[in-house]
Image (cartoon, rainbow over all chains, first blue to last red; front, side):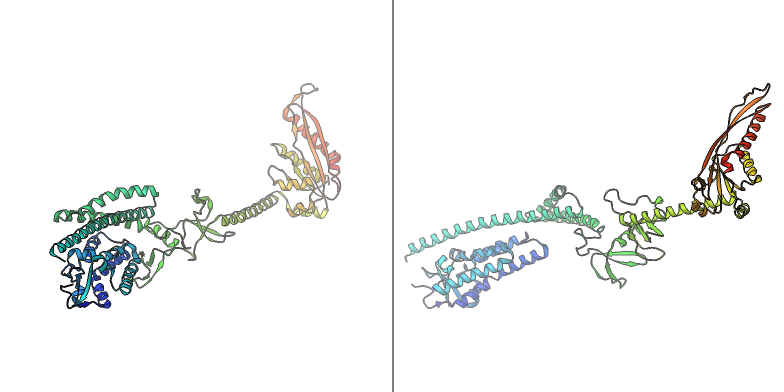
Length: 148
Length: 418
């Protein structure tokens, strides 16, 4: 297949995880904010966190939509490409490939179990990558992540 | 991949992505709505619980009140979190502030009058105090009072009662008699209304509330039903003792007043002491009994000791004489008597024409009972006589004289001879 991938190699798993972790920092902040509001006010998820929820959802879905770069990927020299065309991932690619990560957006609803839920999702993703050399996100979006 | 295939492929991806986005937006909207409803429900329940516990009203009434206060809250909340318009949001924030302030002041006013946890004494204390010369100062937290340097202590019933009294500018009322107290026990639940210091079986002082005895500084104890029972038993015992003492004093007083101690001593030495007791006195009858006693003495039948009239004397003396109870008489200081003569009331009839021309006659009767105190059986006799005279008084005097003579000759009196 021709295109941007011609002189690039598959991204190492650790880099992908690190890039994902950087991308998920907003979600971590959201969880921290929610936990703080729960312990300090007795009310989980105050109305103000509605904005945070929407932002986090679209952040996760669209994080790779800028020519296949997310903040984490850009920092570590990775890029998401369409597997069939080799073109950099756009909005539809990003939405489709990040769909498996959407459940973590609702983790705050699980209270103290939210972080555990996020960790479990990441572990499942990791196992799939290790076993099949292809992440769930790539399978869902028809994409691959390469190192530039 | 040709340009057309690529275009179709991208269009398919876009369609999928848009469909997923729409689906996710719906899911998130539903989730947020549920969260919002849950949040409002939680806050509402919090308000209900607060009203129910702090105002101590029925849970249903609390729910109703919460619903009432909820409406303005939601109104201002809607203005605050709705579409952001500067003026509208300021109105919402101001309304919410006033609302929260009013609600907080109301709860503060209710809670500041609470001193003890609602769950009972096993619950941790909720109020602390320091006692200063100007009065008590209360706090919600323990520790050291920075203003005075004193340690804050948990409030006690005594402190609260004392504080209430100081607020009402009233002192602790004390009573020395239960007759003066307005109430001993609460008629509702039977709890005590009094506290006491002293000995329930001795000297005791009652107080209208818990606190400290102003004389001794000791804690006042609750005047419970058990303490009250002990006090009543001891009080009854003391009352009986007092009654006995008073009776003895009265008897002694009567004896000292009516009994000629010198004559009694002389009669005892002569072993001819007879006491004359009259069953009932009547006007004019006194002189008759006096004459009778004097005659007894003159004739040597008895030494004159005294005349005991039950209406004037203590009945135990008369009863002891009637029973011939030497030990009781001895207890009363009348030992050494050889006998008693119990003289009944003298009855006299109405003057009526006598068989003697121009004279009137009067009948008179008398009962006599002799009680030997040195052995022997009592003896009784009824004497009836008729006296005559030129008028009623003369006839009555004649009847008395004849009655006296008949009495002195009667075997009952003769039996008094030692």
